[in-house]
Length: 123
Image 1 (cartoon, rainbow, N blue to C red):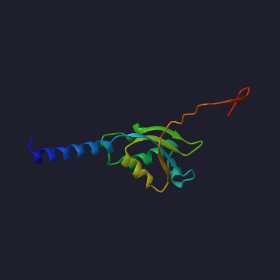
Image 2: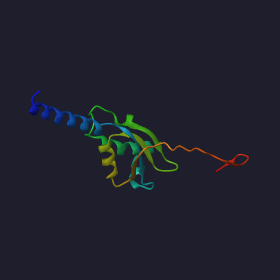
Image 3: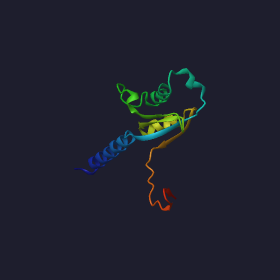
Image 4: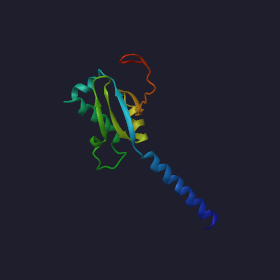
């Protein structure tokens, strides 16, 4: 391969690999303002949560994709919000919406090394 052709091919591969990284989905937890007035316009919390996802996904992904398939869980007790499979750019879009408090990647907390201080009590 000629050096110029090799250079163009290398640039193309870098572009393709960086584009696929931005389309990779991961799980995010989206926290919403708990006393939002817009929530009253929807018949359920899930419908309200889905409206945020529809706004973020609209036009970014395949047009025939149903955004409701991305919601993993709808929270309404400890926090107001939902978890969903999103790309990085969709998460950034959600972060900029006024009723969104936070958008954080989901993670597992691993708790270990419990030490008993009494029967049934641990610290």
